[in-house]
Length: 393
Image (cartoon, rainbow, N blue to C red; front, top):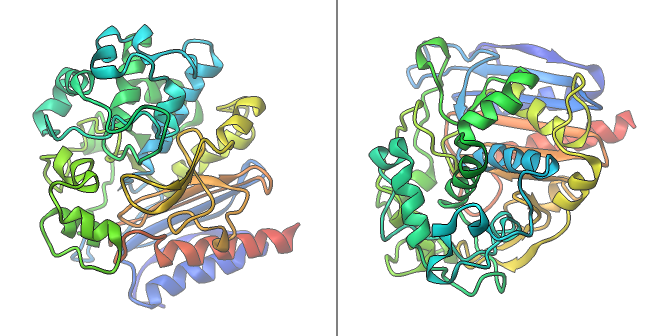
C-alpha cells in the first residue's frame, strides 16, 4: 500500500472507509481517486490518493477535479430545485410557459416534474447530435430540443434522459434567469458553499484537472463490441434502438471534453470534497447554507418513476432528478435503502441519505470496467460508510 501517495483525514468511527479506499488502490483498481463523507453537516472522511495522470507523475490533490459524467445531473437538479423553492420555477407548470418554442411536436404539456422524473419522452438528439460548437453556442442545442419529438406519450413511461436532461433544464433556467445552468450554479450554489464544482470551468489554468482514462462505457461509445451479457449493451450496438439513439447517436463529441464548455448532462467537474459538501446541503445546513427546504427534499425522494427504463432497459427508480433504490445502478444492497443520488458510467458515484444524515462522493480517473451496474470500487466504499455510520449511531 506504499506504492502510491495518499493523504487526508478519517475520523475513527469511519476508519473502515479509509481501509476500503486504500484497498482499491492495493488491488490495482485505481490510478487516482478521492472520497469524502459528510455526517451531520461536517466532513468525517476526506481522502485522496494516486495520480491525476496515466504516467503516474502528477499526484492527486484534495482539490483535483474529475469529470463527473452523469453525477453532473445532480448539480443541474440542485439548480432547478433552488429555483422551485424560490418560486421562479413550478414543477407542474408546462415548460413551454417560459420556452414557447418547446411546445412543438406534442410537447406543450410537458412539465419540469416530467423532465426531472425522466418521463417527458424527450430523450433523443440524434436529429441534431451534440457537437463542441453547438455546446459552446448553446442556442443550437435549445433549438434541437424544441424541434424534438417525444419518444413516447409524455408522462406515460420513463426512460433515462441521459443526453437531454441537462440541456432541457439549462434552457429553462436561461429563460427565467438569463443565465445558463453552469453560470447559475456557479453564482447561486458553488459560491456560497465554496465549492470546487463546475459545469463549465472558467479558468482551466487555475485548476488541477485529472486526466480521465477510457472506461468500458466510453469504449462502447467509440464502437467497441458491447458484448451480449446485458440487454442494454446489446442495444447500444444497434443504431436503430432507442438506447443507441438517446446516447451514442445523440452525440458527436470528442472523448476528452473541453473543460470550459458547458455540457450539463455529462461533463461537470468536481473534487470529491466539494461534491460531498454539495450533496450534504440537500439534507441539512452546511455552514448555514441549505439547498432545499425539508418539504422539497421530501418530494425529491418521492418515487416518480419505477420499473424498466426505456433507454437503459434496466430496472430503475427515479425521484426528482435523482436515482432512488432499488436497481443495479443504485442498489439497496449497498446500504442505499433510504438514500438518493447518481452514479456515472465512468465509475463516479454520489449520494445523500437524510435518514442517516450522510453525504458521500467518490471520484476517480481510471474509468469503470462495468456498465449497467454500480462500480465495485464505489460499492465497497458505500458499504463501509453504512457499516461505519451504524456503528457510530
